[in-house]
Each structure stands twice: as C-alpha cells, then as structure tokens.
Image 1 (cartoon, rainbow, N blue to C red):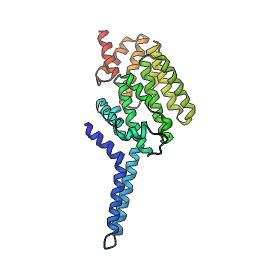
Image 2: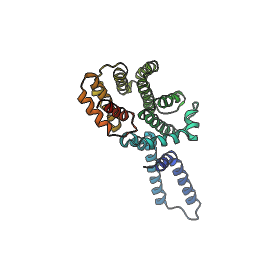
Image 3: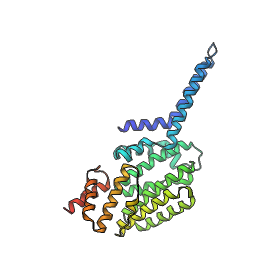
Image 4: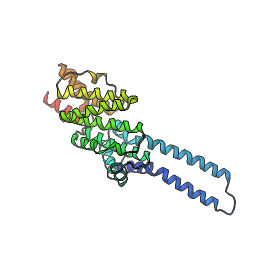
Length: 280
C-alpha cells in the first residue's frame, strides 16, 4: 500500500462524517424546496444509508487507524507507517488540537485517531532502533490536556510508557527507566480495570532490564504471549538473549537465524545478524 493511499484513508476517516453530513443536508434542502412534495420512501432510504455510513465511520475513528496498525504489526511496513505518522504529526489538525490543546472539547474521535497514528510513529522509531526519537516522541504528549474517553486514554498512556521504557532500557538509561517503572505502577492504581495489561507491560520491561541491563535470566519472555507478528519477532529476540545467558548457545543461535530472515530495518534483526557474524 503506497503512502498516498494511506494518507487518503486518514483523510476520509477524519472528515468522512463531516462531508457525509453536509451532503445529506444539501440533499435535504434540495428535496424540501422542490415544487412537488419529496418522495418519503427516497428520504427514508437516504436516512438509513446516512446513519449506516456515520456509524461505520465513527466505529473506525473510535478504534483508531486499524489499517495503519495492521501495516505495522502484521505486514511490518515500517517506512510506510513512519511516513504516514509524520504527515499526521505535522498536520495543522494534529498540532492545533492535540499537541497545543488546553482543555479544548474537540472531537474525541479525532483525538483518538491522531493519537493512534502518533503511537504508531513512536513504535516505528523504537523498532528501527531510533530509541532517542521514540523517547522524545513519547514525552511530547500531555494527556492532562486531552479530551478523550478514559478507555482510550489508558491505552495510549500504556503505549507511551511502554515504548519509552523499553527504549530507555535498551539505551541503558537506568535513571529514566526507574521513573517510567514508577509511572506505570501508578497507572495500575489509576486504572484498576486495566491492571492485567499494565502489569504485563511492567513484567516484560522488568525481564528486558534483567536480560539486557543486568545480564540475568528472566523466563517471563517465554511466558509472554504476544498476538501480532511483530511482537512475536520481538519476543524471539529477547528469548535468544535469555537462552544465551543460560548457556544454551544452539537454541539462541536458532532464534537469531530465524530473526535474521526478517525485515532488515528492525533493530533486533540487525542485532541478530551481528550476533551470527560475531559467533560464526
């Protein structure tokens, strides 16, 4: 999928409801001012179509750009997602109503859609190994200024902290990592209904800290059950490091070989190739 089609998709689900509404109103005025009475069946049919279109568009908008997530987590098209995310972030809409908003009661769905694209961009930075950009991107959003549903807010906050924390751990910045661990633990108290999801992020981050920073075995990486292709590949990377710490060289090498065949833009694919070259 080329970038123009992705951008068109973003435009349609941002403004689709607006244009559908305008079209419907114009049609209504046109029928109203006709010399003869408007056909009731036509109006009823158009009304049903209008409601279905609006519901469909709003459903997509509330969930965010699911196609963008699909490109990232299943197809692993990092460049396309990064380009799309940058267009969203640089758009007037995003800067005016997301980054600079001060308790502005703007459309929750627009906020959600834009934040979803922004989260994808932060994810791309992380998976490309551009940890500094991922950290800066995660620090840029102030959730206290946003008017979005709590269920959406907790998702974005968890994503923000998760990628910032993993980026800091892989950069071995233990001071910032400690602060982010504390912030994630505070989210557990703030959103008890999401405690299982948040605790999984904390446990995975602790495993990464043990394996990467402290050189200690942590088998949570084996227990972790990610659902997307991208996260499964990431799991393989930390499993490989974990097996190497255990002295299971053959198993670690098998994981690294599997990873080396994947998208070369991924930081853990580069690391796997480097490991194989150094241990031939």
